[in-house]
Length: 284
Image (tube, rainbow, N blue to C red; front, side, top):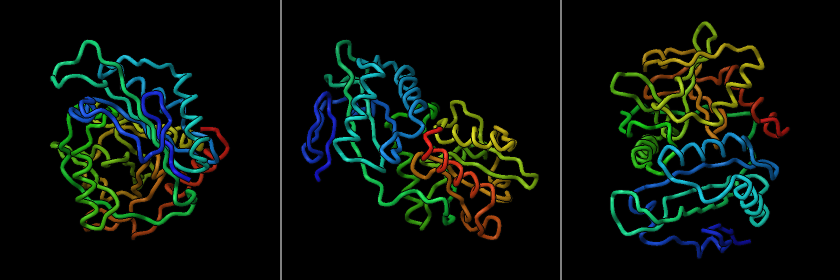
């Protein structure tokens, strides 16, 4: 069956979907996006994704011309039309179409696009550790806004791919780790402390990250939001990343350093299993 996309009020075949040549998302990356995981036909971490979408719009001064209720209706229909049992819904909102000019247009209407993608396989509680590399964080200073301005992230991810790694871990000028090119980074210390960077303008506060924090709290795991450098990460008991598509994935090698003898840590394994269990139960 052909995929169906949503473009500014129309449900059309994916192969025919297009936007205007002067859409500001195309010309200026002037827009935001969200990726919602769907399991068993149900959106996961739904409220968190929609809340962040509206917050991102507010921070870049795009006034939404749609309600949250209508957005939920569109997403539900996209799931039905694409027969999406397990997969993702991509939502993008730009400032809309206007004559090319750096300052904001006075009369444009936000443009909204959605696409659906099937998962090749169901997320499994079991996992294989992945490799990562470290690269300089060259992004803009407001990383907390989920904009479509992702070229530095793409360059970092491509460098990782060319070196046979799954993810690029971004390092700020002060030597501290910010996050992955498309994920949040966590470590477990020798004392069992679960560490992730504080959510401020330096990182994107991942929705999966927030859910993992809640799950960790349910199990009385201590979570510290603080900075950590590359040396501490390389010497950690465990390192793992979280995102809507990676869920919880252990990192067993970073650059030339093997983490914890290359084995999957008990904390990351347990958190992945619990996240999937809660997601299937609709708790998140």
